[in-house]
Amino acid sequence: MGNAGKGKRAGRVLAPVFTLAVLAACAPATVAEAPVRDCQALVRAYDIPGATAKVTSATVRSSGPERCEVTGRIAPAVTFRLALPVRTYGGRYLQYGCGGFCGEVSSPAVVGCGEDTGDAAVAATDDGHAGPAMDGSWALRDQAARDDFAFRAPHVLSLVAKQIITAYYGTPPKKSYFRGCSNGGREGMLLAQRYPRDFDGVLASSPAISILQLGGIYQTWLVRSNTGASGGPIIDATAAGVLHEAVLGACDGLDGLIDGQLEDPRLCEFDPATIRCEPGSARRNCLTAAQTEAAQRLYAGPTDGQGRRLFPGRQPFGGELGWPDWFGQGDSGTSAVLAENHLRYLDFPIGTPHSSLAGFGFTVGDYERLVPESVKINALGLDLTEFHRAGGRLVIEHGWADQGVPPSMVIDYYARLAQRNGGLENTRSFARLFLVPTLYHCGGGELLTRHDAFPELVHWVETGRAPDRTIAEGHGRQGNARTRPVFAYPERARYDGSGSIDDESNFTAAPPLVNDSGIVRWLGEDLYDRRGPVAPG
Image (cartoon, rainbow, N blue to C red; front, side, top):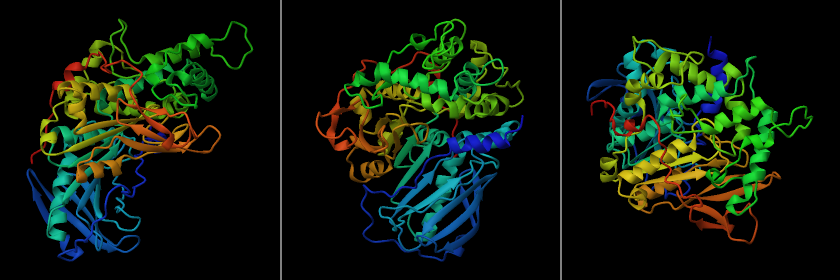
């Protein structure tokens, strides 16, 4: 089965949503740092522990903020791009993660604190292999490429980029930041865990922290739960709409406000069986028996035949409208492409039997076959002691309606992190989580569709003031503009009783309504204490 057509469609869903934002909350540099040498002089070799890098081109571009655009390669096969502001550099370095299976180097846009300042040097990499972002075939027999993707490429890029920045401006960056979504979010988490001094601030959006189980088990479960005997979806767009309206009807007001969104989907205990069609019914606002069963499986998440949980996540209530685009096209949807590529090429050690979307068994034995590679690539490590000690700050942002990376997986990690660090308040001193109602995977959604905590991260790193709230943007059910505050977990937004419900200024912070630790009991709990390999340096 080829991936080209499917990869192009699905890749748009998985691609990191960067808006390459202006850092509105940070102060622009008062004095720009000028280069100390010509851009072209950067073309040479750079040595880092365990590898050599070579800048192959360096050219000044004047469209937008004037910049020196650098391309290069880190041995054996990590290709990168780095953009260096010529006149407006203020001392910041920003590195982007990549989505899907990577394979392509995005063009890093110069960003800064004002629309045209471009005060940050920015870089991106292909993670050590070339190919479409939704094609994992490169991983079948290439261990070096696997290692680059799993744990090496973002780290070595940070080492090389800082050398080039130092060579160009005569001084290393004052502050370094990393941001990424999905797999890029996993990279950010992994960098904080295994390379705690690479970055001062990390923004991990929708992080695929348990990526092997996410790809091999969870996405497989989604597809197989929602694929009928004919190969088509059981729950199509029409049925997803019926289910979504029923969920809102049952749960929208549980947070104290009927506004078309669930502030915390964990409050919802909706049973799809309550809208199952009666035999012979001609109603349109009900589900067939097969659709009811499929919805129940999707809300429950992957288990084996004895009910043992194989993954710490499930579809959240309120995200139903996002299902058709993610796992509602049989073997051509995003979930199917991810699952097939994970199981055929990436999830099992090279030289051992692999599996497939059709052949994977939801058993303890099949789960255990994923563990060796999981230790290398997952970003579940809970020891952030060195990151915290080095002054690192971590912000995790995630959509409550994320149909690709379930929010329960990230809440589980954050709850365990708090447990490891002596409680929530100690953890919030260096790591904060923001959960955005109705937001899908890496952006988009039904109502709130945009959220970017990067300015707040920069402000935290550079002023020491931790963010208590961010702002999500989108539209109300009538199409009007909507803004809402998103408070640092576990707090939630509560309407103060006056003014428009679409104006963030009319909401205050409130305690959570769910008395739940957030920790999920599943077969992979030992993985949180198994530190993966690191590259030199």
